[in-house]
Amino acid sequence: MLPSLFAFLLFPLLLLPFATCNHQSQAAASSHPPSNGTTVYDLLPLYGLPPGLLPDTVTSFSFSEEDGQFVVNLSGPCYVEFEYLVYYKPQITGVVRYGIVSQLKGIQVRRFLVWFDVDAIKVDLPSSDYIYFDVGWVTKKLSADQFMTIHSCRSNGLIDVVTNATTSWFSV
Image (cartoon, rainbow, N blue to C red; front, side, top):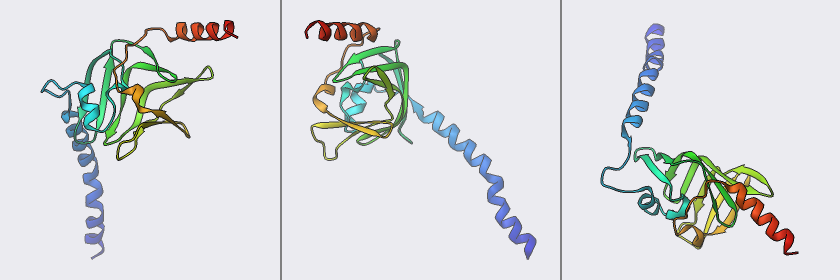
């Protein structure tokens, strides 16, 4: 009786590597760019998110409907000025579900000359006029209006920082 109980408990553990391997290959196989001409800017509103979360320099993207994982490729690193200066790495990854982008990598925001990683982006459900950015343990509420249009990307945000600093310095 003891050997059969041992085999009963051990058998699922032996199958675990095969199940994990199969799941990863299925996820990789289902992660693909939509073939119907859908752009990432079309996809974001389907998940309750504004299309202007990403700059206009997206060259390609892939999305897994199975688990929500996505990869967005830009033509290069860029900066966009919203209420805060935002930096986009050439590749952005994360998981999208209705009303939230989590496990976000590749987007940073500047506050007081320090760059912080944006970990998640959320909207209220039902939709409101605000969008929330999780930056570490801080959540910042911003007006969603500034993310409704797709913004052009600047290649060098340092120019904006210097220009804004000198403008505010000399206007005092």
